[in-house]
Amino acid sequence: DAKAKGRGNYQFFTPALNIAAQQRLTVSNQLRQALVRGEFVLYYQPQVSLRSGAIVGVEALMRWKRCQHGKHDLVSPTHFIPILEEIGLMAEAGKWVLREACMQAAAWQKMGLAPIRLAVNLSARQFAGDDIVRTVIEVLDESGLGPEWLELEITESLMFDDSERIIHAMHELKRLGVSLSLDDFGTGYSSLSYLRRFPVDRVKIDRSFVQDLTTNAGGADIVRSILALSQKLGLAAIAEGVETEAQLGYLRQQGCAEIQGYLFSPPFPAEEMTLLLRSDRRIPLFSHLPLP
Ligand code: C2E
Ligand code: MG
Ligand code: MG
Ligand code: MG
Picture 1 (tube, rainbow, N blue to C red):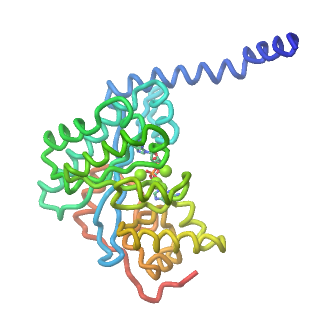
Picture 2 (picture 1 turned 90 degrees about the vertical axis):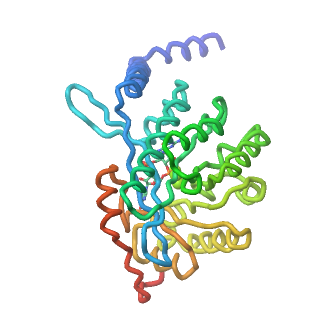
Picture 3 (picture 1 turned 180 degrees about the horizontal axis):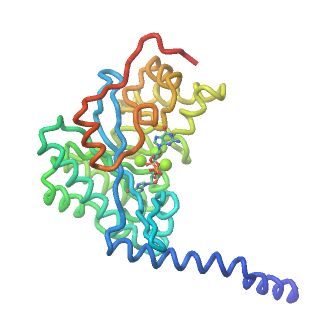
């Protein structure tokens, strides 16, 4: 027993693990500096109405322009957001995202572009410590963006514990005139009961179900049920990760109101998104689109 324990302890100090721990420490330190040096940037991905074919919103998505050994690379949020959360910097980074995105949305309106919704992701940590409601009030005030243009995306994982407090905060955000959407819908636990307990305006159908639409027999059933359910509850719906015309055709046929995905556009930096918004490009709403 003691021997097994000893061996276990010894394992901890193998060079491979040491290197992993070392790398994590390095990245943590780089992330702390990234916030100070302004190495985070926002990309924006269009959300398109299937009624008009026009862009009705954009989702702000974080990227890290890391400078290492004199070279730049663009790091995905799936790699660095968990580390930001772990080292306690997500609330601060999230506040930066909210401010930067609201400033940009207000700037687009000032340029005379047709006003569109701005969707910003919130992490669980932003609800936990810091006062999210006060932050939103501050940022709207600072940017001059009308609350009706801001939508906050939250995931079901947020709602695990202390849900009374979170529901209270959500109601306060709604009182400000901000709307709420449930991201990655269908991937968490007890999605259906959450829908009734939490005051959300929109569900975002997770891209795994959209991908399954044409590759897996059950996929279409799941998407159809989510759409029927959201209609019944009076919620808006948007499908994420739409990549093919076949997926688009199915979603249209099932009455999905909006889509987001590479089929229309990937996420772009602000300057490129400005050009796309100016171009007034629309998704072609062919009625002869193939059905799966
Ligand atoms: P999400 O909020 O579900 O965002 C959608 C993700 O799907 C984005 O990945 C987007 O680039 C990707 N995507 C969009 N269309 C397609 C498509 O057609 N095909 C495929 N394969 N992917 C598509 P991204 O930008 O890497 O972000 C990943 C996740 O990181 C986000 O998922 C969100 O959970 C998180 N995240 C990003 N920015 C922020 C932020 O500012 N705050 C917080 N808390 N989380 C963020
Ligand atoms: Mg999102
Ligand atoms: Mg999502
Ligand atoms: Mg996601």
